[in-house]
Length: 468
Image (cartoon, rainbow, N blue to C red; front, top):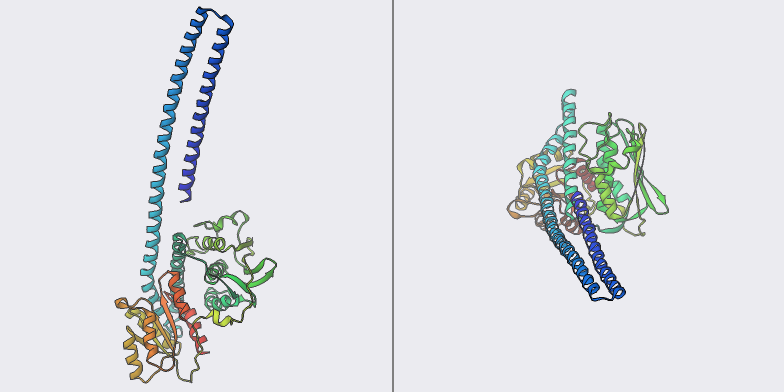
């Protein structure tokens, strides 16, 4: 789109210059005719004879004829230029409309493709997580580990494509609010600790009591990309996430001891699809969109980026976020909306899972059993209620996919289960729908929302926090 706009502006400027030149020539012709008439009048006044009047009239007629021809030619050229300008403007407008339609089609394709791919990917992640690593040989354990990393990379790539689609479609409206930065750090910590351990590096997140004013979800996307990149480009060593108070805002920093970046690449790395040509860059690390998403979100939220790096020593990526007002809200409530701690006895927690995919139910059941929970899986809320009553159980947590069979929705299924029991269970909705408005509606109603395919570290942290 930017290349098309540049070409359109260049052609428009060229036409403007040509029209201005023709108009200037037109004005010059008028001045010439006026000068000729003045000269003839002076000659007539000087000679004063009838013959001189005749000669002057003949000269004037010839000069006027020549200038009139030039004037008509110039006007014809001017008319052609104006017609050409209208044709070019129309062509540019049509090209712009075609480009916008193509961009919208690309956005819809990315969203649909990502949605369709996430369902089988979710099942694969759950099945791999359910495997008992202790029962495997060292060779099989290594293969399972590599499979988990490969699926995690695919999941990150799909999430990146969805973020790009949302940004390109203009479907993101920032919702500015005041919240403690610990609301994000507490949520990201458990998730990336598992990723860092798998990569063989140390991840340390330093707590902060500062409050900031910005969009919580978009800032989470920024930090998620920065931490993920830091882990990805740190072959060994550690990654540190911390905050520094500055006069202009809170500086949220991500330090790493990774490969570093040469000076000539520091600005270009925020361009889409740009990747630093580095001999130590790991294979299969993405398509170079993560930092461009960071840059676009920072521009949208008016956040200042900070980048310092030394090749072979490591990098610092940071964003400076405005301070927020003090509030009585608990950081825990903001970090885990919709979560109510449940007092449980020594019995395993009962977790209800509703999904119209049989494979997803099998995977969730295996994972929950591995974590010491008692799963109850069903394709409908009615089936889940029958199983619970038959086994004389009350649910501690209900997990439902949002889009169920027969146009049913997960929030309605959870509400149906809640009506059947005195103690209202905590709830969690899974979805691959990229619509941010849907997430906001569900969160306002007290539902915790997780993306599909599920990040098992986030799911486990949620359940552990619920059990308390």
